[in-house]
Length: 252
Image (cartoon, rainbow, N blue to C red; front, side):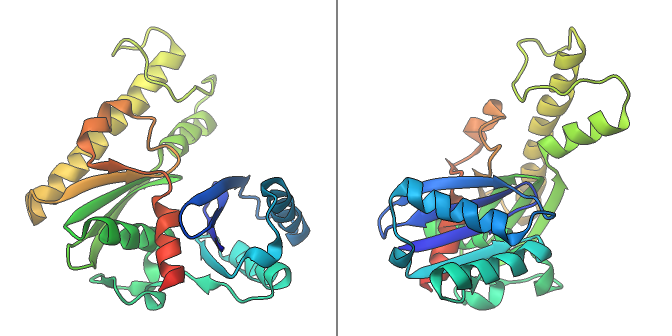
């Protein structure tokens, strides 16, 4: 079995692949202040729940955009599975290259997204990742990452509004029935959610206008299903795209 771990700014996502399918997914809140014992026990509990032995894991792949946790998880994986994890990085997968100014600046999760999209489609593609950040990774049909656009994620935007504005409530991520807010909650929902529909569509439009209309758009990330009005804008939606990219990196 292969264990893939994606450490993001909001969640740490773990999943096992048995050679054919993903076997269960575990999401742990990203808590940098927690000691390694906390994460180690969560992983052990996860394996117990899945009724899978630690010894069944033959390969581990790690992606992290949180440097402190990368170090912690490298040690945990070495201790639990007696192996050094494969670190997702442009240097760890030669089938996808980069045409950007600084190769070390691209997030390993975005690199994994590009790897999965290239393997799945092998055509010009825009990968939109709805996570803590909203990202647009552009990869050519030849497997070259041409660049990335980054905006605050939906939850990040709402959280920023809550933190910086008095008397505004936290709101559920669901589209209101009317396009004009009738109360504070629906006002925020319309402003953020409908606004992000326009943001996503305009980003894709600009990329296509400059690079070509043949670029298909695919979506991933934990919030990829929130903006239901965008369903027809995407060729493909898969919340596990990053994990799939990690699997491909792990298998070489």
